[in-house]
Length: 209
Image 1: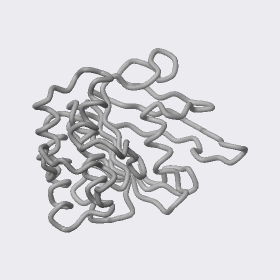
Image 2: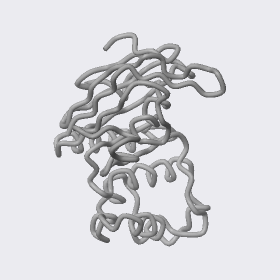
Image 3: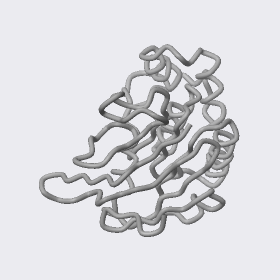
Image 4: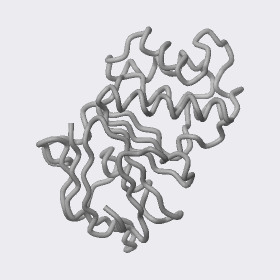
């Protein structure tokens, strides 16, 4: 699996949010993206996920052009910004509903994802009663439950305690070992320690490729 971004520019309401960006990501590796707020980190993840379309340039998912050959990567897990879920379901019920869309994750896959992030599959609390940290964990569980080829994580340790942060970092390395492309956007330098490569962004540009 390979993702290649070639000379991508994207403007929103006349403001350039990605400026002639080129970079490449390979399976089995962890990539860190750093930069201040507004530097383009989240927009780069949204681009790869197919949530926004480039004004110019191309995004290649292996040999397929995003938004031309395919609308979005075929097997991708995404945690971007604050996870927002239905409030009246339990965590297990929530992930079952989401898994039913693509029908790729089994009930065992869902339970395993919840356990890996430190949530209890049998917990009867509805998401409305979850803390911010629990919702963050549920978002990560949703991103990994279908064993994605591409895993995009935006500020993955946000609102997590020390033990949970360690769990998430373990998951990140396990997903890369499984062969996934793992891309992390974070303000926290510790989140990107040990990455295969680090991209620094500023004003929509990749400063160090």
